[in-house]
Structures are given as C-alpha cells and as structure tokens.
Image 1 (tube, helix red, strand yellow):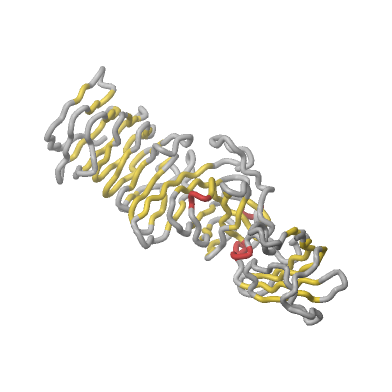
Image 2: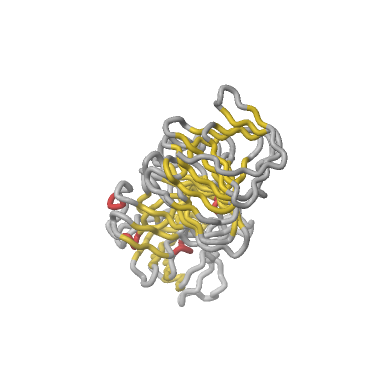
Length: 384
C-alpha cells in the first residue's frame, strides 16, 4: 500500500465526509517530485489540470476506488494499485506515465465521453489480462500507440501507427457478438457485407473514434477462434460497419502476421468516424465468389453512372471482361477503377464511343493482391 510522501498545494479546498471521498473545490497544483496518494474516492469540482507534475496514485486493497466530479482531473504520472479496480465516472487525464500495478480502470462502455486519456502519447506499463482499461481510452499526439484495452479479464490491444499530425483517437474493446451486442442500440449483422468479404468475427469487436485517416492493427488471441473465419491468416482483413451504408465494408489488409492462435492484422487507411465498429474478417478464396448481379443507369443524371464493385479498391490487381448476350466482348480492361459507363470498346463495335443498348450483359472479374487468384462472375443490366 502506497502512502503520501509530499504534496505542494497553491490553493486547496476539500471536504471529507466519513472518510469516503477526497472532494476538491479549489485549485491544486502539484510540482516536480510531489506525490499524492488517494486512499479514498476522488471528487473533483475544482482545478486539477495538466499543469500538474509529480505522481498521483489510486490505492485500495478491497474497495472499488471511484473518480467523479464536474471537472476532469489530470495528473503527470499516475499509478493504479486498487485490487478491486478504479472506476471513472468522469474522465482521468495522464500527461506522462501510467503504471498498472493492481486492478483495472473501468469506464462506462455506454458513454464514450468518459475515458482514460493519454494526453501526450506517452508511456504506460504493467498491462495484462488483469490490468488494463475496461472501457474507453483516448490518446492525443503523433507517436505510435497501443490501446491498453480489454473486456473483463482479457487484454485485447488495438494499435495505431505514427501520425503525420497531432491527432486524437478514442477506442474500446467489446467481447460481444456484433449480431446482438449488449452495449449498442443497433445490431451489426454479419450477413450484411460487401461481396468480397467471406466471414466476419461473431465473438468480438472494437470501437475506434477519430476524424483523421489512419490505419489500425487489430489483434487476436486463442479465444478469438480465427479458424472459424479462415484457415489462412493471409485472407484476414479489418472490416468496419459503415455508418452510411449500414453494412460491413472491407478496410483492407496491408499486413498480417502470426498463426491461428495469436497474431495481428493491419488495415489500409480509413476515417474511423465513418464506421460504428470494426473487427476481423476474411476475404473470399478462389472458387467461392457467388454470382453478383448488378444494375446501373448511365443516363447522365450523376447517380449510379458506372459499374461499381464494392471493395475492389482493396485488391492491387484485377481484370474485367464484359460480354453481350451473343458472347461478343464489349469491354475489357486491367486495373479497373469502377469507372465503366456502359460504352463499348469491343472489336465488333462500329463506333467505340457508342452507348451500349439497354439490356443484360455478362461479366468476368478476376482479382487478387499480388496475382489474379479470384474470379467473380455475374450479369449486369444497363438501364438508361
């Protein structure tokens, strides 16, 4: 059990009722080498801001230590040594280092406004299955950062790379089925997905918030049941539930490592706030792409003007061929960009700029990351 060793206070007003809360109404300033130990709950209705230096510790052998108040408390160094956890009912800021000694930091998963905030991308240590943030953590800065987040007695990190500008991101982990989550009002049905997505985890997901583009690395452990998603980790990808489209979108795989028991997968760049939640999914393998039939209307009204294959941008190579009902090739291209507007380029066409007539056409789309390893077929109906 830690004790108070030294504290420097410029203006300090507090009350203790039955020794159950340290209640600050005034202005506390901690200088370098100062230390304060909270062996009771903290309520901050005054000033405890990021000008503080020194160490603040939260300690308990048996009770849950709580932090409440109208104002956010921010300290330089923080250590958590509370066997029965520290519960945040208002956000707690850390501007330098945090040490997990005993217990977890709990934040309400139904309210992302309350979080443990790392305010300068700085250091923490001691995290494991029994010592982490069960709820939301935020980070502000430019350095690479791994969120020390989990659910109950399970650490489930999420990693961000170095940023090219000062940014703020916030995240939490949920050991829940996205089809029937406990902490969200909506369901995220795993059968509502882009065609290039084969399977989606039904055991866990993360919530990542932020307005700047970034990649993210998601991890898995022996409880993630990755073998139910794929037998080949190279097929894994990060997928996100799109707020705009209300379905799962392929966020890519720029790198995957590990095995079916433990590992990690990194997405391509995306804007976190465009997606309600993210998790691990897999891409389709060769021979498993079902026929996908598409209608598009290249009539000049700026809506549905081109033939679009959702998720195509996640593949580095592709080749598209389109045939009319007599089997004549009317369009062929490599590295297709979802930009065909229904004009023929086939050899049998008299004028290569002619609009193809209304009707049904048949396509073959080959695609892959490094080679053309997958094939999708279907029909497309041009309607003007």
